[in-house]
Length: 355
Ligand SMILES: COc1cc(/C=C/C(=O)SCCNC(=O)CCNC(=O)[C@H](O)C(C)(C)COP(=O)(O)OP(=O)(O)OC[C@H]2O[C@@H](n3cnc4c(N)ncnc43)[C@H](O)[C@@H]2OP(=O)(O)O)ccc1O
Ligand SMILES: O=C(O)CCC(=O)C(=O)O
Ligand SMILES: [Fe+2]
Image 1 (cartoon, helix red, strand yellow):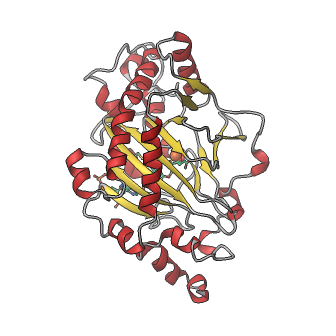
Image 2 (cartoon, helix red, strand yellow):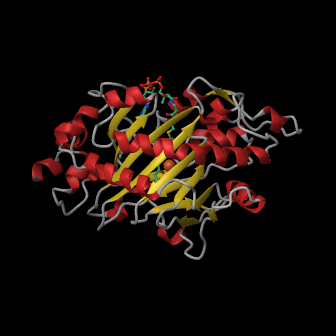
Image 3 (cartoon, helix red, strand yellow):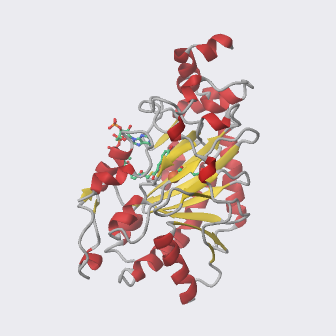
């Protein structure tokens, strides 16, 4: 084991090539974090900047036709870019099943998970990854994930791992009406009365679901689970377990707020695509996940996106009201490729679309 930990190339082979991931490394019960994962101080979360007395809004959606609830959603999207929802209509049993399925996938032997590594995967729509982009990240993040781009039920049945695919598909189906409702509410404030065939594609034409696994880490203070970043989605529906560890930057400040686990809740965050489409009215906010010294953590984000071929820019209904466009028109797949070409670095992806 000593040679594995001292030799970066052997370590990379074990973690990235043989399918062990950081979970496999954590299970060796190593006492100190290998250098490969030690993040520069400026990439770690400065806990002295966490404000314990503030929290993102919690919105009860049981009466979602109520104008007060609809206003609360839009206000949260403008002022926080992040909010938690309860009574959202996605059955608790479906949520529990997808959490169990996530554990089942990561409990598979390395030999099995290895089949989904980018170079072995039968399709580019599914990949098992450690860190964010190990080919680009100089220092690795303490996270393994399975990323699944939804194309069709048939494609998923053919290629997704059988231990988790049915539960993921059920979760995707059962969250669809919630996603439509949230987007409809957000569009109404922009002067767009409803979701229809003219706007549905650009707002929710593709979905990617990630199963994230953050294993116990020997020196959590020296690394990150996920470095500071904003999502490139329209919006993200995030399911987290009871561990905690997600922090959100407070708008226009240097302070961070914890997103506490709340049984049965889902966390919603605005992504870069909706910040661009709304010409900056809705905010895509930087967030960060810390590593944990005692508990394995899972989370499951659904990234709701434009279609890869869509060209995104400030919506005409927003610009026609006289606002100056803050962003140019960019092809969404170019935007996402730019995101995947560099390591996490706060909010810098959106510079790609700045006028
Ligand atoms: C925080 O930690 C994260 C976050 C995330 C993701 C966050 C999001 O917000 S994901 C939302 C992503 N949006 C979509 O998936 C939208 C729809 N998809 C597309 O636009 C396209 O499928 C595409 C992603 C652009 C891929 O285009 P395509 O040309 O068809 O395919 P490729 O040639 O395979 O890929 C091009 C380029 O991107 C790299 N890449 C693609 N997918 C991934 C991926 N899932 N993970 C890492 N890298 C990916 C690929 O390697 C290519 O790179 P080159 O350098 O060779 O050009 C996710 C993970 C986190 O940890
Ligand atoms: O694990 C979490 O709570 C958040 C993960 C995240 O930000 C992401 O996958 O984009
Ligand atoms: Fe994220």
